[in-house]
Image (cartoon, rainbow, N blue to C red; front, side, top):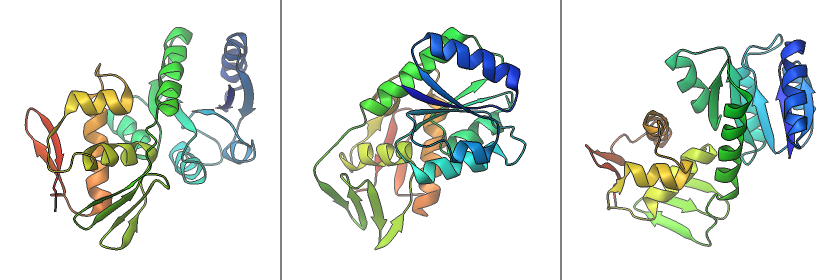
Length: 218
C-alpha cells in the first residue's frame, strides 16, 4: 500500500515512516501542505493537522475534494472533542491522537482500508421524494440542486435511502459503514448532523430515539 505521511516533525516522520515500511508499506513523506498536494496518487494519507504552511483541516478538505476514494487518518496532538469533530467533518475517516502505539495505528489503518474496500457498489438510482441518489456516480440531488457529500456522508445517506421510511438501527449503520459498533456512536451522530446540514432540511433524516434513524419517504 502507498502511504502519504504528512508530518513536519522530521524525527516523528522518520520513526513512523520506518515503522510503516517494516510493515510492508511504501511511504511518501511530506513536511508541508504543498508537498502533500504534489505527492501524487496514494492509497492512504496519515495527516498531521499542525503544518507550517496551512492548517491541516484545510488540507484535508482539499485532498477529499480531489479524491473522494483515498483513505485519510488524522494523526495529531489535538485531543479536544471539537478538534475530533472538525477532523471528521473535514473528511477524515478516522482520528488518532498523539501519542499512540504503532499497534493501534496499524489496527486503525487496517480497519479504514477494509471499510474503503467494502464500500457498497450498486447499479441503480434511488429516488425518495425530491431526493435523487445516483449510486454509481455517487452524486446526490435534492429538488434539482446537487449536494456535495463526503464518502461517509454518502454511504450514510445511501444506507438510509435504500430503506426510506424504515428505521435503520444505529448498530446496523455503524456496522455497514464503519464495520464496528465499539466507541463509534459519536462518529455516527457527527455524520448525521453534517448530512442534515448539507441537505438543508433537518427533518429529512429523522431521529428515532433509542433506536436509530429514518429517511423521510417523501
